[in-house]
Image (cartoon, rainbow, N blue to C red; front, top):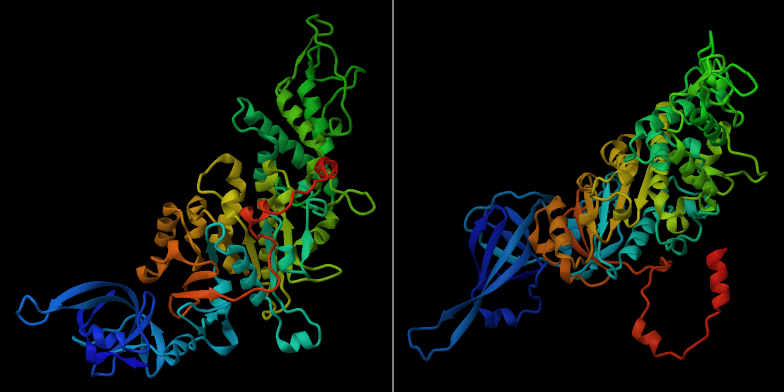
Length: 586
């Protein structure tokens, strides 16, 4: 602890500002420990009240010695500090407690004081992924329950070390205890990473990696909004007819395949239906002819068959109807939906013919059979870390998924996890059993944007619902983005903890400062100048908002930047163009 009371005096006190004047620069410069932006000071009065403050800024004040104009000027400083908490009986507590005016004692906080600040976290809850940037001998201890149990925002521009920071946070979070490691047991951590660039598998060697060739996500798991986003153009003039008849066909086909054992089946029930049969139904409805012959008023097939109940006929195959006729004996006119679904059916057929979407529209099991309703438990195991080889981390590699269905995939998996946890809470065997689940959305601005376009409606709704309700059911979010100003504010506003790295875009800087739960310009003002691997941690989980240096990482994500100039100076080498193109086409 360096006592600077003799060369300082407090010249201003406000709820969020304490101004300290350094009266002797010469003495100050001779100190072994000096202040810098972000340093901590301890300010006390004679009544035992002690405030801890962070150096926010300083300004130079000129003060003349004597009255002779030839006397040299002595430079003095006014230091602006921002109170962040208080010490009571040696224990640090957040929040300010008024000190008597003027306070008498000013000290540069020692390492012991800094360690004491972070020692307020109970031992069984301590979680750390870095050291204090101002003094790397001090570990920044967070409350792990408050950090992971409340939503997390991780922001930073490209090149700030964001991916490595995310990996380090997760690696420390899932680290098993020594007792668990000794007997080869997994702990009860569950993390699902939506990896848009395919870079996290190297950071988690024992994770389950699900690429587009491994992903099994049958279309019949989609709810009404996801199905309609996938297949229906909302701006078409007759989209209301498409929605109503597609909905009716799906419900009836689910009832057909569910059998008599299912008491109720809805559009959103996770029950198998045959997309081929639904297409048959709509194709027949699109070509339907109504017989108006004497005593007839029903759909009629070319072979004379009367269609009294459409669902008994239209699912199995594409039918031929009687020809249109104006003759009284054979009069037949177009059905109510004749020709209404031409474009809709073309779009459905195009989707079915796109092999890139087989994981969604034609997924098959190892024996080439279809996934049916009874396979839902196996489908859920791939996302929750269970199965033949249990794992704490599951990674969905979104890099190979067509962009036009990316939002549907993220929305569907998100909703499945939420619904599973919802029912787990209701039916868990004992009160002690919990299933805490962290969903990590890498580059979240790509699928939960600020703009409310119809294309992102389902994924926004799924993620925003978890942001507002997920904690009740043991689901927490980590929202990761290099463009936070483009992410849904509803999602970010629900985050209680932020890890903010260097941000160079002014819009992103101001947006993040507005969202942060603590108004500490002494810390947030450093956003554009942070070095790589430095981060500001603010929120409920940390005793005081802190600028930390993230620990080095061994298993790194595959997100390193290419060093262009260095690479350009290397010798030219031949690229196997044919092999690259074959991979591209394959």
